[in-house]
Length: 267
Ligand code: GLN
Image 1: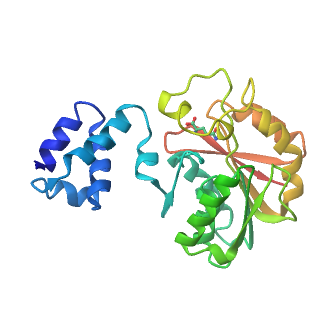
Image 2: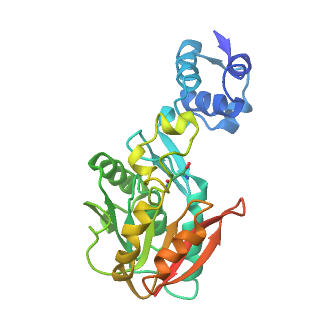
């Protein structure tokens, strides 16, 4: 048998030390903190090595453990869905600000819901809200539906298979993290080899999906409502122009790194 601290030291020579801690905590089913407080416990080193091998081969930690935290939720993720990024929490912060002095949105639409991260976060923030999650991937919708059950909001959630125009009706809050990476852009191998290309790439300039979304968004947003739309950090001017051309007002919100990350779109 091998003790946890020795196993971690060995693993840290092959993969990032933090990744090793997360994988070992997952294996022994304790929190990372508890693992670090208990370094002398013995572990199944063969099982741990198999996880470390997968990470060393490039598989993202979230797909190995099958979960990722986002906002206040622990979401199940598989290679059928994009791994939720902390950057996307900027959209939830923007929505919270927009509805700060109000009872909150009653109807929420999440276009390209993936794991359900944005929709389910919104529904946990506003317990009276009902939400619709749209995605072109049936596999993603199954994961999102599972996550809705875990988050305890499934009775307020509907999932719809379809593209950007598949939402029906108007919504107080529209959330959308579309693909926005230019096809020629080089992404880290663990992203491009593992995460769904359909959730990442959007044509030669990365703007293809915004071109389709811009004319649709005005129709989705109810009076007094808002659309919070994620953008790539270099796309603020280009995407603002696309939405402004449809008569929408656009403000920008920055992520924790100080980069423009969210268009706050109102009518
Ligand atoms: N932020 C993602 C990245 O790692 C891109 C997600 C997206 O295209 N919506 O590049």
